[in-house]
Length: 371
Image (cartoon, rainbow, N blue to C red; front, side):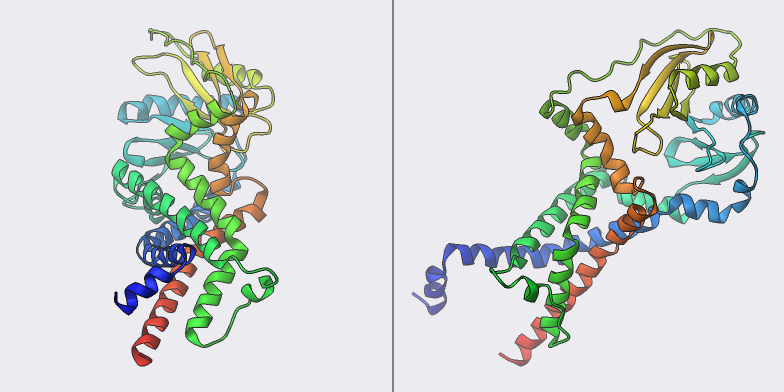
């Protein structure tokens, strides 16, 4: 038996596991960590996407929001002009974003004057860097396949974070020493910066990563959460309504919807189409974290009558946990402190990538010069 084989055979299993984890942590960190770092950096920018848009168009905030009648007239114009060209849904103007934001195929967004419905701006991933970063952050610029790859990278990132915690975990009485940053030599410096920063800020980055993975795997995660908390069946939308030729009073529809949501904020309208005449309006119920709300109200447009209301805050715990993932991930709760915390979390993966690479390079150089 060779000396190397004898040494391997005499190594305790715990040490062999630790050695394998170190190897995996290093190489997965250098390879998958690059993708993780790019996605995280794009997330830092996206945390401020609304602020960036309003900074580019400050004139949008200088006019008061129109009343219900003016909004209804503008929305009717939007439907007449743009629904035949692919308009799918429209965000209602609010103090947060005081223009109509309309959604079109292929991720394109168009913005309209809140009172007149006049087109103000067209944004898509080809002409807007922020929407390009959004496509990178959510689909790795590769559609559904990119989203699948993103989910796998996210799972590996969770492994990197937890394995890093295991590798850092200090002996009893050595906590302060394990959190110290060292100035040198290089191998000790980069390793201490990498480990101590990761140990202190792990909860923040782990929350951002877990919520991101949960968003990717929403279709599987939501049923699992609902089952775990015994939520009962999902809400069943009303049956489709056959379209017919008739006038639609959008002002009456908006008033009926507002009266039905009991203090909630109307946020997004999905207009009738050739298959279903019902109007669906998403609203943000009191106490909801999601910026656009996950609550919904369905209306008969011909009678301006509410058909059904779904209030997200009355769901079971599993559904509420699922719907908290996006606002937690995007920095939409707790005001600017959480928004900045989420933005800061996006800077951590690049920091870990760089310090991990510098540690690997310094150790490699030391091995070469000191055989």
